[in-house]
Length: 301
Length: 281
Image 1: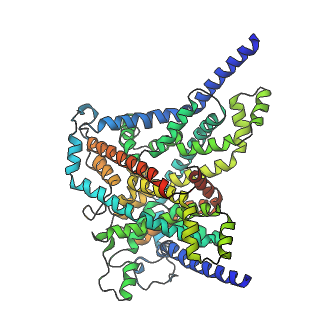
Image 2: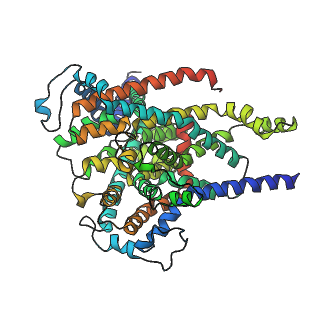
Image 3: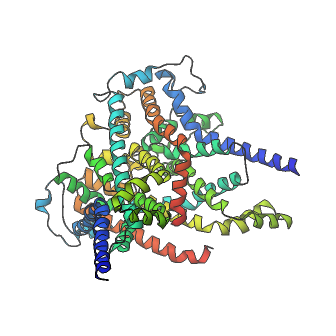
């Protein structure tokens, strides 16, 4: 009895040591680069930390960063721009869903089509930006040349135009994100039992009605997931803006993620940037909570 | 009836082929432009097959130095960083995943939950402090700043491994323990060989992520000698007065080729990985 008990205790000890040993690298990274950083960021938002003067000269300045933020036109523009992009997310998702629906109904060359759709997603943001910038070149680019041939006198300035830069970006992000969303939808569609469709067909239901009353509700968990991750992604993304437009012209394409980077690494205002990052975090958090509670209304499981 | 089905299938295929061609068009144009003489790049209407095929673009980035170095160096830098990050992440995530799945230790589930929660944090929140940490460690402007983070594992990778290991039957564990094998032996000789699908999935995800990684190099690298492909391309394309469009296109094609090849070869695992992530989410 004694011996078994001792063996058991030793085993438990062994498991604990092994367990922590195994997760050590993971845990250390988590503690240092995540927990510590979040805490530091939180505190830094209330200081005047500056890249030039460094950590030694950090001083608390209360809510100064936050009041500065709400008077900063650039900050306000960045948030508004993000909301603009968010507004188009449902449309982008719908396009992906329609494409997935068509493919799911069965096509030839499925693999080839899938690869073609996915290519933009696996390519580098820099390469995508370079190619699109050339295609959208107002003077020489193919897009505008095509438009001129069909009679459009003054085609838009795209990336150099304050009014057209956001639509151009939306087309680009739809193009590059489509592959992923289509794949996600496809895997969701596969889960819908064929019998439901078959009984609908027997009842003589048209494909369009089929789509809206059967497919759409049943795919809603996937739709919800894509919606949430896309919106969160939009709040975080900034490098494609940096590459493509540098936030311009003016501030018309600056998104909050990019402005934080700019404030920190180009202007050196680390404290201010940290404060903005906190606001960003809070915004994403609230958005997510709102969406989670809203999902009960339209997501069917 | 069968004929009707085939008809509609063909219609859908045609629609999809047209749509796919539109999707792929920018890449086609990129390839064509990289082989076109400079002055004809913006000519319209453009021809699909440049005549004559001109390799100047490729020469201008592979043979002549750009920013002081040729594409070869940027390629090498990118390969180095990607491979180091990939292996570091694989080792850490598999070890951790195994522990979360099979080793019972106090606090296990809490720590795992905390790990998953971090996936929700915007990157900007940790960006600045992490930069300071690397700065204090003297690692700014080194490759380590980019791949070291990977060696601490990622929540996604750990999650994948944990899910997979959890599905392996307990009997295997028990049999090995009966033979006196410790956790590490079990991990190395049994678990890893069985985990090939997850390893493949993570390889492609990490390869793609680090090969294309732009933010890391942008923030941490200062000397052109250390640049990776994405950063090198971007800086090249900024230089509007000296730059050759054919050269940029050639550089882009060269940079995109490896990832495209890897993706096409391992498509299956990539799609698996993506769908596992979403189904559980």
